[in-house]
Image (tube, rainbow, N blue to C red; front, top):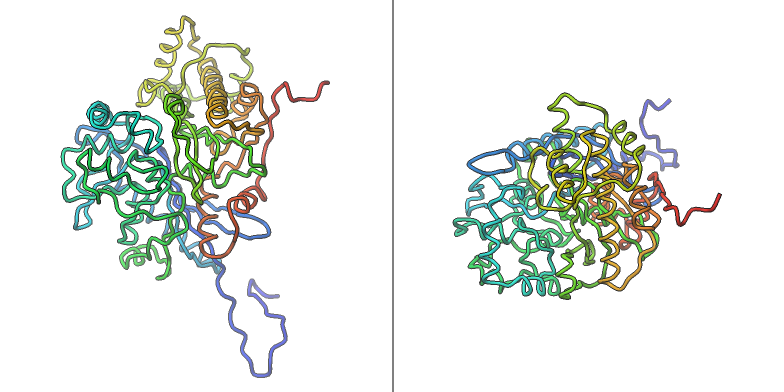
Length: 501
């Protein structure tokens, strides 16, 4: 009986003392979305794939503060430290060693940090309306056509350049995007990870550098952002104060991953063929294809597609479509009214309703801010001349039908604008668990849908770290094969592809 102790059965020379086995390398992923965050441990094996263990979950959200919608960043960072401390404890208990930490979050938002390393104010949320007034001022200096020709970025009124243009003063500060801000507080090192930089509206899509001319035109300092860093490169090691608070090993590195959460998610799409499309379905839906080069045509701009960097220099050619924010906001409104039917039951009731019901434009900016979502959806339906019953199941079916139709339109536009056809659609993220949404997407797009993994973002985060540590090797194809190993994938066929009965 070994009582859990590893026994070395290899013959030893007389008098030799067996050295204890080195702790197994594991990786910590800080994965934060607009409504929640978590710290996870990832264990990677080249032969069996990746296993994830959720160590700490915590809520995230906007608060009304100082006249605007902001992130409760102090609380957010405190939860990150709490999660890292718990992860360190779990790893020690398992005889493991956390060799690195990767951070991914949503895009576009930032904190302003002065020369002393202090946040000058609580970071604004992209859901705040302050940037709306700055759009016209920016376009008066740089036309939308010129912006797109250089950055290839989809127009959204909350893009980082519009937020910065709304700042009263940026002298003596740097803008650290949210994952870079967390990395700075952990290491003291200021960097801007490239996949997230590409979503600012101030990044040259071809050169892969900051668009210095745009910074000058908007009278922003050329060092408003820290230097760029690529996924897989080391940001730094942990500060002594962080080591004390977390109990992590002194040489624990913070490694840049696809810090734009969609970049990490797309890196873990378990595609076995090149002609795939993807839908990262969560609070927002990111619908697109992977390309080697950006598409900067006027037709692409008019269609409002974006060209954002992916892991290994790929281009995530996609469009933001409304997401499950619509559903979660409806659930919140219904709960406030005392209606608390479980989501699974709601979806079953919605699935039982006939096809062909009313739809909305799910990515209309009117749905961006938190408010009474069911009323806003019914109002949008009335504007089309249709009527949506008050029953929650009817509202849910409208959301699901609208999202699926939006996905199908976006995929068709991506094929038209890139000249590429796609054979399969991979849905990853929380929406991959929504069987109704997946089947409706297959029907609307007329394509096979493969759903999963749910934790694609954390998988991509961990796999990039593991490759940086030399635990795995290869390019995206190898990482994707590992992401799919051991993951339960569910396939949905549209009616036109099913075998006749």
